[in-house]
Image (cartoon, rainbow, N blue to C red; front, side, top):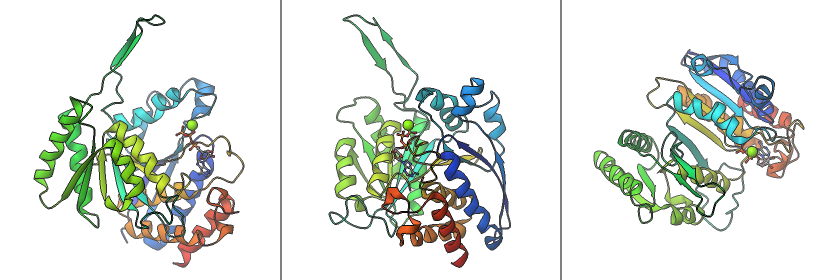
Amino acid sequence: MTNRTYKIASIPGDGIGKEVLPAGQEIVQALQDRFGFKVEWTEFDWSCEKYLETGQMMPSDGIAQLKDFDSIYLGAVGWPTVPDHVSLWGLLLPIRRELHQYANVRRIRLLDGIQSPLAGRGPKDIDFVVVRENVEGEYSEIGGRLNRGTEDELAVQEAVFTRKGTDRIMRYAFELAKTRKRNKVTSATKSNGIMHSMPFWDERFAEMASRYPEAETDQFHIDILTAHFVLHPDWFEVVVASNLFGDILSDLGPAIAGSIGIAPSANINPEGEFPSMFEPVHGSAPDIAGKGVANPVAAIWTAAEMLDHLGESEAAQCIISAIEKSFRDDATKTRDLGGTGSTRDVTQAIKTFCADA
Ligand code: ATP
Ligand code: MG
C-alpha cells in the first residue's frame, strides 16, 4: 500500500483512442481501493478532431498545462483527413521533446495465451525491452532541398547526435538492465556504413559499458539485428538504439510478440523533472473506429506500465496476470487475436480477473 494520489492527464485523441483509453482507466479505477492508491484524472480533448475545429492540435500553452501531472496517458492521435506531420508536430513531438521524454521504452514480451508469428519456429521466451532515443538523432529538422523540379534536385537530411543525448539514453539502458533478469545491454549500430554518427555512438556505448562492468554487452549492425530479432529473440534483454533504428526495432518487436493490438509503449523522462507519457503502440485505426471491436489490451497493458513506473508494481502485475487469463477464452479476446469478444467484453473480463486475483 503506497497510499499515494496520482494526478494523471488523459488524452484519448482520435479513433479507437477514444474507445480503448476509457477501458484502461476503468481497470485502474477498479484497482485503487485494493492497492491503496488514488488517481485523479484530468481529460484533454486534444486531437485531430480538435485541429479540424480550431486549427490547433492543442492550445498554445498545452505543454505548460501538462507539466505538473504525475503522468500522461494517451490513446492515439491521427486521422486520414489530417496530414500525419500535423498530428506529429502539433502534439506528440512537442510533448516528447519539451517534457524531455528522451527514452522511448517498448516492452517486448510474449504473454501466455498469445501466439507469436514465430510460433513453433523459435524460442518461446520472448521478454526484452527496446530503448529508443526519442528526441534527437536522425529525426532532425536540419537539412533542406535544392533545385526542386530539376535534374539536379537534391535533398539533405542531417542527423544530430550529442554526447549528452547519447550518454543519457545509454545510461538509462544500463540502469534498466540492472533491474532485469539478465543484466545485458545490446547496442544497435551501423558504423560500417554511417561514418560519423555511428562510430561516435559506438564510442559512447563502450565508454558507458566501462562504467557498468557487471553488465554484459554486445552490439550488432541494424540490418543483422533485425534478423536476430526474428531468429533469436531470446538473446536480448535491453536493446538501446538511436531514434530511427529504435523506431524500426520497436515496431518489429511487438510484431514478434503477437499483435499491434496488445503492445504498450512509454515515453520516459528518467529524471522525473517532467511527467512521462504512456501510450499504446497502435494508432487510431480508422478502419475499425466506432465499432466497439478495438482490442483494449494495449491500452490496459500501457496503464499497467504507467502504474509500474509510478511505483505501483503490485497493481501492475495484477493487470498483466488478468490480461493473460482473458486470453484463455475466445469470448474474451478481440477479433485481431482470433476471438469473438468486443472491447467491452474484454475490458469486463480483465476487470473481473483483477478483482478475483
Ligand atoms: P499510426 O500511423 O498512428 O502509427 P497506423 O495507421 O500505421 O498508425 P494503426 O492505426 O495502428 O496503424 O492500425 C494498423 C492496423 O492495425 C489497422 O488495420 C487497425 O485496424 C489494426 N489495429 C490497430 N490497433 C488495433 C487494436 N487496438 N485492436 C484491433 N486492431 C487494431
Ligand atoms: Mg496512421
